[in-house]
Length: 113
Length: 118
View (cartoon, rainbow over the protein chains, first blue to last red):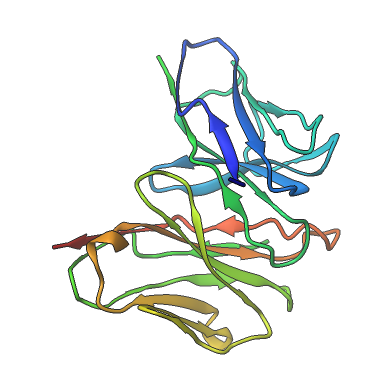
């Protein structure tokens, strides 16, 4: 089945540790996105990429890093510099172009303990 | 800059009631796109509908209908005869070109949580 796979579904991290969230898609989409969801905050854009080996910061990129070495993969690293990393993280992909809808993964819930 | 406002944080209804979810947007662009997504408890967002700024026709799909009005910058979503399975968080989103004119990255509202009681 075509779609987006995020792993793991739940992740626990100790303060001061970096952690990487995985996102893979087999929809042949050029664009991929990372959003953070907090209660009452909606979805806020962390990073996006529209082509391999290129990515752009979103509204809340501080404390996060990404890479896009393959079209299918867009991993997100939550670094120790992120002051409040506990949240629900959603990965999405779409075709590049105006008005294209995004397809979402099932999310990763990160908890800092 | 773009902004999407969903003023209703949570709506609670009884099954078979009609319910309208409000979405108001702000943009300076003449070309833009509006979307509605549904987020069930499983977590992933599911695309429901897209509208471009040049198409103000309302749309009906089964129990769902959408009312797009540029004059009031609104794109409201109505569910007729609601069912328990409609319980979810619903997001309105807006996309337009960025300063370079090409990205169309969607900006989401804060979402409205709909609870349908049996």
